Amino acid sequence: MKKNEINRMKLEFDALSSNEAFARQTLSIFAASLDPTLEEISDLRVVISEAVTNAVVHAYKNNGGKVVITASLYEDRRLKIKIRDWGCGIEDIEKCLQPLYTTDASGERGGMGFPIMQAMSHKFRVTSSVGHGTVLYIEFKFS
Ligand SMILES: Nc1ncnc2c1ncn2[C@@H]1O[C@H](COP(=O)(O)OP(=O)(O)O)[C@@H](O)[C@H]1O
Ligand SMILES: [Mg+2]
Image 1 (tube, rainbow, N blue to C red):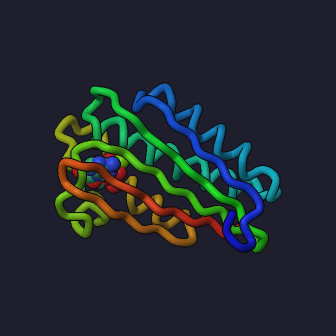
Image 2: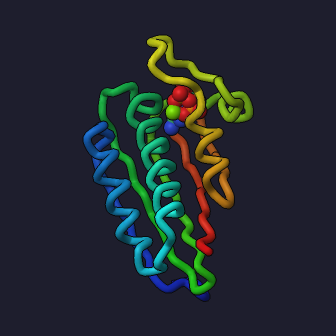
């Protein structure tokens, strides 16, 4: 383990919308040892849901695939999360981070997933490679 790291986990699951709840519950339970507030847990749950939804509907276009979440807890009450998919990837990350930007044609999605993830976390970074997949680096700092 890295310096000041107190716990670490890795979760691999199929890109199914039914696994959104599974992922968000698992991360909430993992974070519980830091005793986050209800609001902090609520933010964490929203961020995980948005991220997993994007992997399911955008990266893999609802055709399934693999999602891996790794997370670490630190002595200074940080939770660092990495969410990885091996889907279509993102061509223009800056554009996708803009509020209301969506490539969804169904009218079901509002293009607020990334802005919400950014606003609710302490640090947020996206790396992606077209045809290879996307990695989200998300950090929470609990009070
Ligand atoms: N994991 C991903 N793989 C490929 N494209 C993605 C991924 N996550 C997000 N995107 C792209 O970024 C856009 C914006 O995402 P988001 O802000 O969550 O809005 P929405 O999901 O409502 O479209 C999506 O419409 C999609 O084009
Ligand atoms: Mg989204």
